[in-house]
Image (cartoon, rainbow, N blue to C red):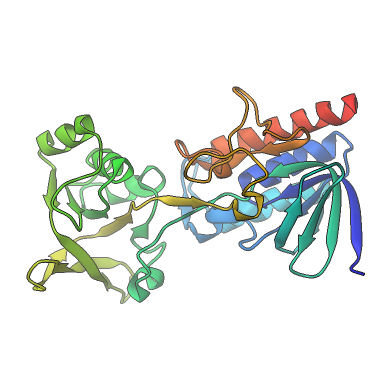
Length: 313
C-alpha cells in the first residue's frame, strides 16, 4: 500500500497561478500542499528577462521570480512536494490523486494550476535557441525586437494576431505557413495583408533556425518549399512559434467539463469547475491572455473560493 498524504487544499502546479493560490491559501490557514509538477516554476522558468510583471522597475529573470514566489509560499506555510500527478479520482470527496513517486494525496479541495505548454516544431535548433531569440509569446518578448526583423510560423488566429502585434515593434514581420491559405478569420487576414510591415511566405516549412555564437541569438531560418523541395535562407533576429498550446489536463479527461481543446471550463467570473471543490486557475483554463499576472490573479481567486467552499462544508 502506497503512502497517503491528507491535506485540506492540494494545489497542482507551481507557476504563477499555483504559487499565488498557495500564498493565499496559506494565509487563510488552510495548510496547502503544492505539487511542483513536471516543470517546477512553470513557463517563466524558460523565460529570460521579464519586463511586464508589476512591481519591478528593471527587467527581472523569470526563474528568479518563480523562486521568490515559491519561497514566499513556503515561508507562509505551504508544503511543496516535488512530484508529478499521474492520475486523479474526482468522483467523491476527499479527492484522491496518485503521484509518479508512488505516493497518494487526499484533498478536501483541489486547485488545478497545471498550465499549458506551447506546441513547438520539435527542431533541435529551436530547442537550443529558446530564450535566445526563439519564443512562443509575442506579448511577452515582442518588445525585445524593436526595429528588428522577426519570423512567425503558423496559420491560425494566434499566428496572425502574434504577427500583427509584433508589427508594433519589429521593422519587418514574416509569417511562414505550410499551406496556400490561412485558417485565421477573414478580418485578421485583411489586417495582416494591409500592414506594410508584414509579408507572408506560403507553402513553406521551417527546417532549421540559424544562430548561436557569442552573443548567442537567432540570425535566420532555413525554409523548404513544400511543392518543389527547394531550400532558401531568410535573415531574421527573432523567431516566434504560434502553432497553438496544449493544456495539461489529460488526467482530468472525462471527469471535468472541458472545451474542445482540453481547456477546463469554469463558471463565469469564477474558478469553479463542474465538480464542487475543484477549482482551475491560470493557463489551464485561459487560452486568451496567457500572462503571468493574469494567472496569478486567478490563483488568488481560486484560493479565496476554496476557502469559502471549505467554510461551507
